[in-house]
Length: 433
Ligand code: KE4
Image 1: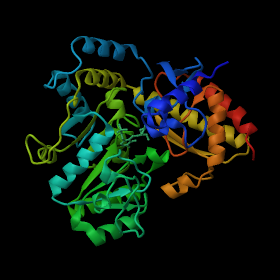
Image 2 (image 1 turned 90 degrees about the horizontal axis):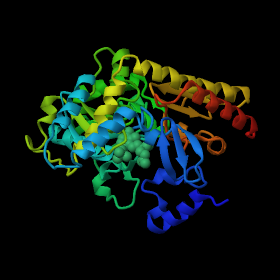
Image 3 (image 1 turned 45 degrees about the vertical axis):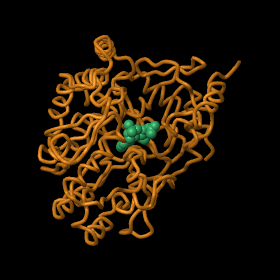
């Protein structure tokens, strides 16, 4: 029988670089043929061979309700019938902004944009404009989109400036970017000691989903907050992945529970707030946001920013996840998946650790939860890749890279979780020791 995924992949590679419109989709980290998705519904995807998968990617986070939620579909169809895009303000942009503000303490105003990259890039420009400073800190293993200044790997020394991770990014563009190890308080202290009053911001993934699933320790989070405050720098939370995904108030609300009074200065959102449509945002206090054009000197713009169909999709999604008990149920379901995977690995005598918060999870073929990028990348890649393909063959679609997080939706049922754990038990039992 023809493998239509393979045929489509070959055809795609003739017309699109690497056959994909975003590199991780090409399966290069895990090998094999990417699955071309024909349709999705609820917790499931169907590929070009009409094979069904339980979906744990959820479009890399947005599909928190699962695919094709009736209330969201209805809202999108109604909005589309009223017009796709106007290039003029609409009431629904106000409603979505108000819905975000209502759930995230510290956000008094938001600006809507079309991608997480655009939101992260704009948040960095805003922090630089607000402080009048050029330098900023990011962390190894954190991804904030592909804006030039953010495509940086660590420099040779802890407090030296970064080097581009991508061709086409001139060294001058990243000369102000300091890349430090995640969860390393000493490195953070040293960087502020060396450059404190020159630092515009610290940009961080509070739970790093681009390293699979690594939490910022409480001491690290406290140090970031303290050092930013002491030095007049802004703490920028990149919640593109964690926002409205790990909790209704995002990771900021998780850390505020553990660190009373904790609050970042600037927030970056994406994924869930668009419900699968191109929509992202950044926000903060009125004082900081007043720097943005047309009010202030920091320019930022977008033809499709606040797009009326995308805002309808995002708003309908947020209206569902705000329901009482939604996140408690999602968190319980997600935790049961992780616990099931870890216990299946233990039965097979294979080291596996996992963690989850809300509807986001990660697991590692390791003895302990990694605390930084180097440890994540040292986990057993061969074992992960064999597990990934074993699960894919059994109709379970996990993230195709050991450094990516996974996502559970409210459409996943207890039977889906049980079937996933049963598949994992089979695959793990067959893995070489
Ligand atoms: P986008 O430009 O892809 O919408 O968002 C960039 C971004 C910013 N910040 C964080 C924390 C992110 O996770 C992302 C994008 N996440 C990846 C998944 N690791 C999207 C998948 C992809 O690149 O195709």
